[in-house]
Image (cartoon, rainbow, N blue to C red; front, side, top):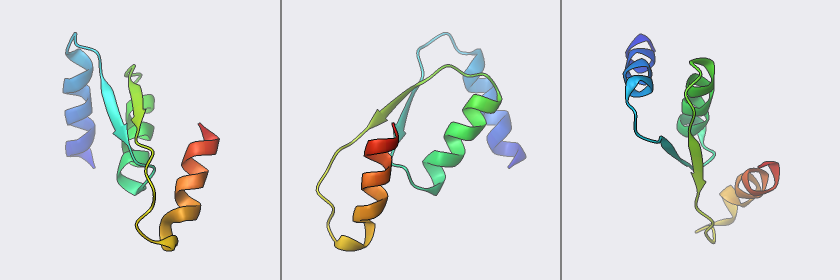
Amino acid sequence: MADLRDTIALIKEKPQKKFLLFSGGADSTLCVKLLQEQGVEFTPVFAKHVPTNSMNYDDILKIIFKH
């Protein structure tokens, strides 16, 4: 986790705009939390797609309607 925080600190120093490809899964949710924790301004980018199976459909609806 320290490595990820160090990486985000380096990203914060860069002048370019930051974008996060946000799926709503555990990895992208952790990235959002860490970026916010370190005060990194970023734009989340969501991809709307038809789920390949019904197992993840509820998760996708949560992502779409919470943001």
